[in-house]
Amino acid sequence: GAVVSQHPSWVICKSGTSVKIECRSLDFQATTMFWYRQFPKKSLMLMATSNEGSKATYEQGVEKDKFLINHASLTLSTLTVTSAHPEDSSFYICSASTPIQGMNTEAFFGQGTRLTVV
Amino acid sequence: SQQGEEDPQALSIQEGENATMNCSYKTSINNLQWYRQNSGRGLVHLILIRSNEREKHSGRLRVTLDTSKKSSSLLITASRAADTASYFCATDAKGNNRLAFGKGNQVVVIP
Image (cartoon, rainbow over all chains, first blue to last red; front, side, top):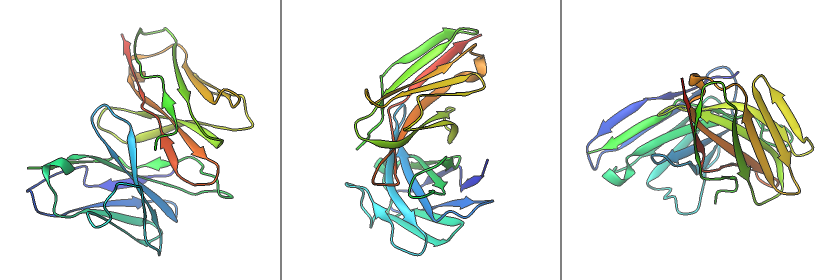
């Protein structure tokens, strides 16, 4: 199957700093990528839909100024957690798929990024 | 909001036994997918079943879909220790291109 690479796999940062997470589709073009957040022993919570060449669509309750998303090319989307605080510590996962006729097909996930804010 | 909702259960079974998980959802869907997640890792796609399909097989996996009951089941036959993971269903609701994930089932296969 297709490969989605997410980097870094883990990061520890100081409170107040910003952290950038990259999500790359290595062997296919992804017009749409998704960013999720996952708490321990919980399911994935969709944060936003990243669209190549346009603004991201954020889910209700997700601060767009806090979680900046850029999808500048068909193979790269980035999520920047700005002014991180300990409550932002979580597991962040991206995914990409190539909808066919408006329907989602198999989604390919990055390996996730464990963010710890101290 | 999450559309797919598994029954919130953890399964602990002996190697060789079958494991069954259920998933329910609320809206009309285009398809339903099952994913597997090992601890601290990304998700791996297992199987996709379309809304006009009732049953699908892939290796030791068997998925059923009952659109009248808005439910699906995942059966893993002849489980192995390596099947230990969390399993999530995800629905692709008609009208949007977002996947909604359920709570997940943690399966532990004891060697």
